[in-house]
Length: 149
Image (cartoon, rainbow, N blue to C red; front, side, top):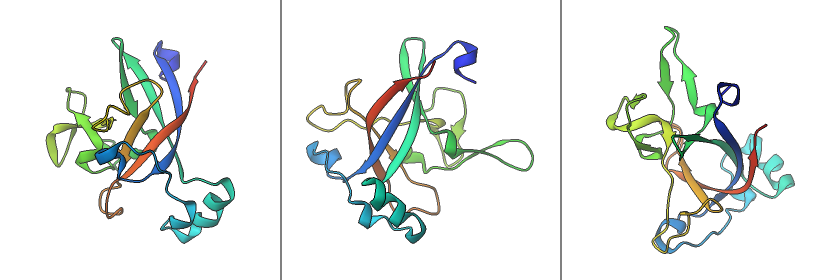
């Protein structure tokens, strides 16, 4: 739908990396055998990664990151924010996070390591922590970037 509205959109395929990225910039993949959900573990072992994806949408020449899976609708038709506040970027007025109005409830926070990794188009890292489900945030490194046509 975003593409049909004229937005430049990229699909980013990602895999889970160790939290040490935030301190040292090390892009160390989390072994799929460490997937906590036993229903998914065998599938992830077979594909040799813990996968996830997000979309990169260019708005006003700036990239914004959205995880469509984490935007849900409440019974009353309002939008429900699924991830914890620390996964989202600064609120720019679209939808604030209900637990922290300084944070967006839509746009993911891009993570940059202290040595600058994560600061280029080739190195996109983002957090995922389903609020109330995941005990701590997981980091995902985008290894594949495809423009949607």
